[in-house]
Length: 282
Image (cartoon, rainbow, N blue to C red; front, side, top):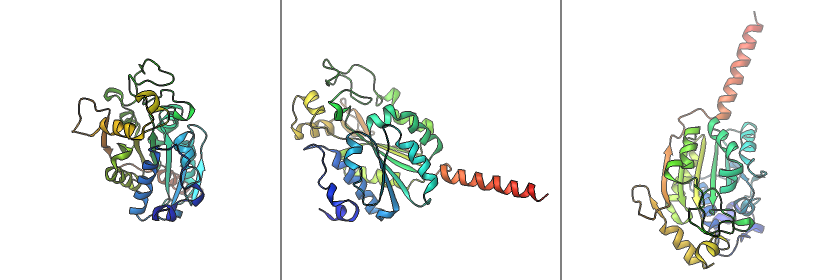
C-alpha cells in the first residue's frame, strides 16, 4: 500500500476488486490525491457511492464515514445528509454514467438546482459494463456493444448540441468539468476546484473498460489498446481534432457564486423563527 492508501483507505479493500486493466483506479487515485493536496483528513469527508462498477469498487473503501444509495438515489440522500452534518464537512460521491445520467438524472438535476454542496465524480465506462456491456447514455455513436451489434445509433449525452454538462449548467450547477482518467495532473486540479466549491460540483471522467467495452468495440481486451483509444479520442478544449469525442477541461466555474442549499435553508429557518418571536412579543 502506498502513502495515500494507508492514510485514507481501508486495507481490506486494497487492491481493488476491479477487472484487470480497469481504468477506474485512476479516477479514484486522482480524487484521493486531490483531497490529500487540499490537506483534508479522513473525518473531513463523507463518501457516498452508487450501483455498478463505480459504486461497487469504492463502497466502504474510505476509512471514514460512507454510505451507499440505491440506483440513482444517492444525490437525494446526499441532499438530506447535507442538512445533518457540519457545514465544513465535504460530501464526495463516486457514481457511474448510468446512475448519474440515466436513472438518477432527475435527482442529479435537483441537486444542481438547489446547489447542495457535493462533489460528484462520474466515472464513465461508456455503457452498462457491469451487466454485460450494453450501450448507455454516453456510448459514442457507431460503437459495437452487446445490445448494439451493428453499432450504437442513438444520440448520446456528450454531443455538442445536447451535452449533459450544458444541461447541468442550466439547472444551476456551479462547477463542471470533463476529463479522461489518464489526464493525471489536469484531472487532479479540476477535482481540487470541485471540492473547494461550496456548492454543486460535477466532474465527468471517462475511463477504459477492458472487459466488455474493449472486447466489443475494439475486438480485444488488451489494456494498452483501449487506454490508447480513449486517450486518442480526447483533447483539451481549443485543441480538438477531427476524431475528438471528449473535450477536456473546466466547462463552467461559478464556484461560490450562489447560496449553498443547506446554508440557505438554515438562514430561511432562522428568519422564520425571528419573525415568529417578533410577532409573539406583540
